[in-house]
Image 1 (cartoon, rainbow, N blue to C red):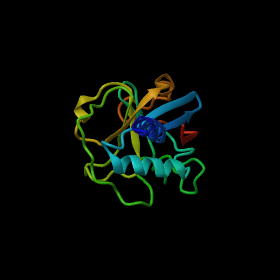
Image 2 (tube, rainbow, N blue to C red; image 1 turned 30 degrees about the horizontal axis):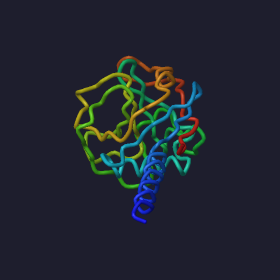
Image 3 (cartoon, rainbow, N blue to C red; image 1 turned 135 degrees about the vertical axis):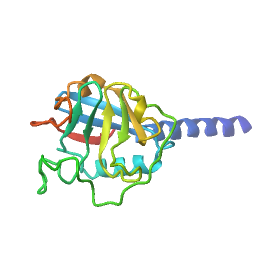
Image 4 (tube, rainbow, N blue to C red; image 1 turned 180 degrees about the horizontal axis):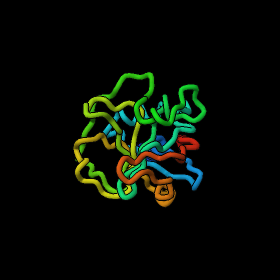
Length: 185
């Protein structure tokens, strides 16, 4: 009888671990291909929740990559001014808006800003992240423990590399690429 109980517990644990893992995998669709992202709820639970909530509501769909600096990062997520299908779309303001939700408190961790990391964009105030985020093209150690890391690209980074780059100083992109969609796997 005890063998059956242990077997049941083992199977139950494996099933729950697998479904939990799938809950934290998101698919970012770009015109170049699909990008698989693993989220880190144990490191940045509030940022992961916000990202998943906005993605599940379709808020990131059609949002431009308004700031893209070659060799550094691609920034997106301005759901107010950066959504090409939104009534407030304004490319010159993209990067200054966010969602209607309150800003998030910083959730800094020891995770380094290496290639493929997703981190919350913010103003000078560490507690000002809202909906915007960036994906690192290369390691950026000067950002470590200064920005809230909440995920990492685990497949499809070659498609992120193809995102149209902006001005080498400001990163401003005159005719930017955009997110087609972000969905749970």
